[in-house]
Image: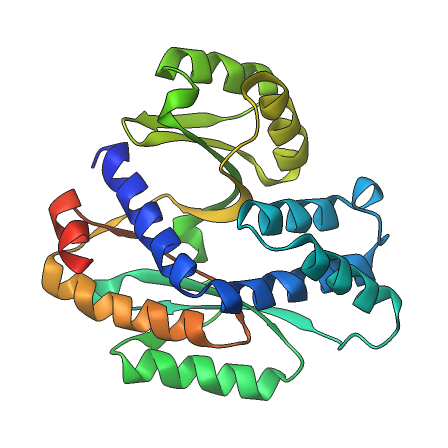
Length: 247
């Protein structure tokens, strides 16, 4: 389907995140602390930390919260977190990737597995759905930043690989390893982005009707509610009418 429907899907997930702002701040803090602990505590010298801080700021996370998360990593009292990715299927065979950060692998695995089972899904082995996604960088801009041609030219100059433009905005994709350089080049040309992050971009989509989406959203929302879960991605595709009916 057209990029507009994909944008609607993105916006729906963003709306869900806005409702869980405090929980999202906790997830951002965890990512910032881990990034700072794994490398330099200075965002200018640590690309992963720089991206984590940028994403937190774009979600309006207070500067004090960000500073505390970085200091926690340097203070020696930060928990040891392990990053684990789970893959499975939801309603109508929709592929789901669950990215977690946990200090208890057994607890997280049990919770994720039971959540899939409770909401009609099925947790698979690592790699069972990953082939349907590409790991990429994603930078989004509002429609008013410029027309499709203007944004396309800026994206090409910045080293991006693809652009999806619609009346709702522009979504620019690049190689995951190029995200920092591409986003900096884009901001020099177009100004500050709405969102800059690493994503799993579906290469195959599963079309969903309203009934299927209602069931699927229960699974995705339940997964996102788990404190160990950092991000949930699914390859569903739905019409604007279906997405609006979910609101």
